[in-house]
Image 1 (cartoon, rainbow over the protein chains, first blue to last red):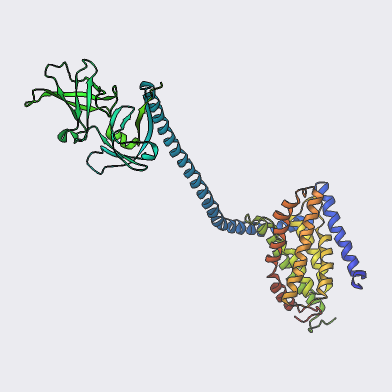
Image 2: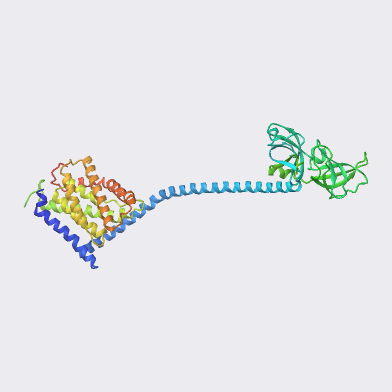
Length: 280
Length: 181
């Protein structure tokens, strides 16, 4: 306490007050005191040195801090990109589904007397041509053997085997398949069936065509409705060639099915005709 | 001629002190005002000059500590202040507080840590007062989190080595401080 009452301390306080007041007052009036000015001048090169060193250190440190920031930014952008990709994929799926539902609706309008259920392809036969498919509908969905399977393009085939929640579908190009057919122009009747040779090209044949029938290349072929599998009026395909059978003396036409079996495998959707809308 | 504690004349000792502490203070003030204030990765500038005032208060006599604090305040105002500058008085006040504390503790490293913690707190308190006066302390959470706390921590950390510098300086100047160095 003695020290703080000493002359030395009081002088120090007075000097401090002067050091506060004089520069402050001079600064208020826009002047700089000589001592401060001299000190600043002497310190200037040292200050420049200090700043240069600080800039160098900051630059060095910023390499690491920027790395962390860029890493975080990169991770955030990756997440954003992933979510955009997910969204895009979802959009594609929805768009595909929308297209299919539209085609489903068109078929429903064209064939109002038929009852449908949609089905997704869950696997296909591991052969050269995917004409036997497994669908995700089975007994629990009311699916029975021999129910016709169609797409918006036309007839695909029929259910050949039914499991609890799955079924197998044989296409019209398979040799095990046959259905009554009718051409659109001259109403020529015949039977469309699979052929071992034509199957490899995705084609089938129409047999039992009377030799004097008015059938031409380009005629559209529809289901005839005879038999107990396919209802009448479903598009089968188009005549691409006509030949005479040398044994039976009838005509045999090669049919190009309207359904593209390759694209159907990728679209993953078909319709199973489950019955007839007798009330409608 | 008056003779000092170690057989040197008081005049020689005083000149030595002025030179040694003057140079150290000059370097530290420049470091604070140009080097540390330009480090962009530090959110607040550490007040190492107040650390120096604490170190002098620990190792030196009250007279030396008072003169050092006065010079430190003036130096800070000259190099980094503008407008109304009050650092000389503030440093004098801090020197009084720190010298009083230093007279009650041992002159070893751990008491130095305590003294420095008090000095850092005083520095943060001064900054807070300046912010209040300037009307920039409205967002207390921001002021505390982004300015005061970093300043307190940086001041403490960057001033810790000053203990060794001023210990050496005091030894060189053959200080008459009441603790054995």
